Length: 210
Image 1 (cartoon, rainbow, N blue to C red):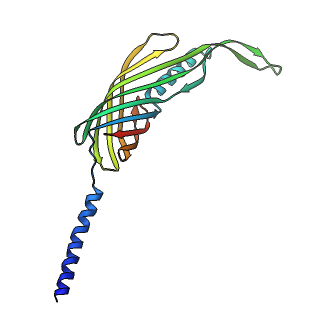
Image 2 (tube, helix red, strand yellow; image 1 turned 90 degrees about the vertical axis):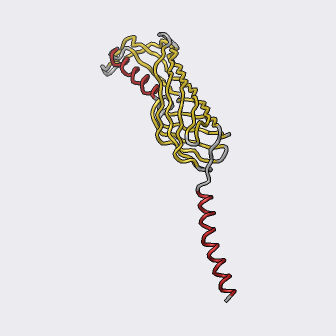
Image 3 (cartoon, rainbow, N blue to C red; image 1 turned 120 degrees about the vertical axis):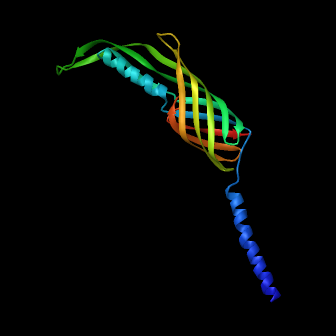
């Protein structure tokens, strides 16, 4: 009888203790004091705006202006954050992107043997835009686990364009809105952010937590 009572008590202890331990492991939190991120963004607002502007320029020139060998580097960025609350981090972003290509102007046309005409273009030089994007940023975390965290990001302030050919430097409003973001790892983490703005539709990188 005593052995049965002892076994029953031991079984009850295991049934109550194991779920607590599992619960503690499942919801192990990670709330660092600071973060440093290095990332790369694809399909930025600058990509769309300048590409659309070049398409309009070629259209309004009736084919006399042409931009060939166009390239878009994507946005390279560095971000730093400090904890202001267990769920909210405040910081700053510095991003850089370059867009460019070769400029050609129509110089005439030649008639082929079959009677068709081929337009001839004269090379006029290279065009490029350097875009600097310093922004203030907020990162509210809505799930902060020791191995996986999820958050959103809102950033805004500056957007500076430095033309490499004609035109003067200009400044405008810059922003990034990323509603769905995820980090994975321990003190060193990878991250992926989906959004729209100066860091692109997709922003990937590494994060160091302190």
